[in-house]
Length: 67
Image 1 (cartoon, rainbow, N blue to C red):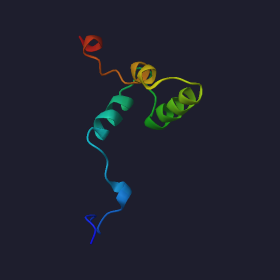
Image 2: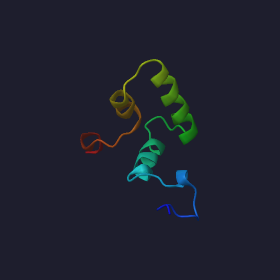
Image 3: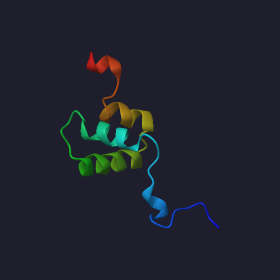
């Protein structure tokens, strides 16, 4: 017997904080839609950008930026 529920697919569960990341991407300083931000993140990742560079660029969740 598996511990998985039969009522949802295995990919339906999102990890803790997934909605927080989505909200941070939606509130980007460029006014891009979520689809546009994801496309830009894919483009920058392909060019070798690191995750911290992308998060500084798009997810304005830093405390000093809001004060």
